[in-house]
Image (cartoon, rainbow, N blue to C red; front, top):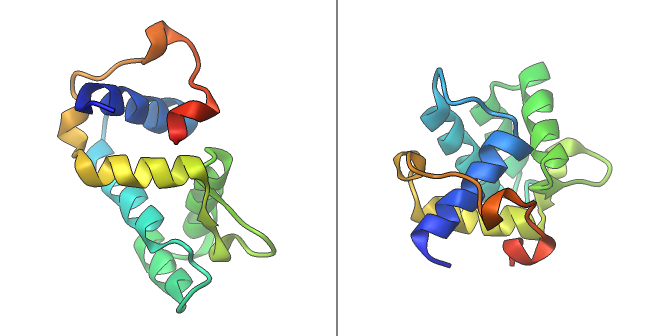
Length: 122
């Protein structure tokens, strides 16, 4: 996938799946999402503790982890703190390691605005 197409797909993840807005500190949010995804699976080696540190712990941690789960980037069993990556989450982490938030400045919607399919996240 070329960089422009990758940026367009990250645009969908960030602004549609995670419902982030472009004002405030979107680059910091981008980095937090990337760093949380990079910790997965959180159930190994106590990585959940690092995730709690990144998110500030408590209710904020629960909200952020739940948002990653609802966006289809992570999933979990008995505890949200033990989450692991989905296929979409693996794709997203790989793309976020290749692109910085600034690379999304010209991004838009892929597929002529049509929804992405599971094939996009392979």
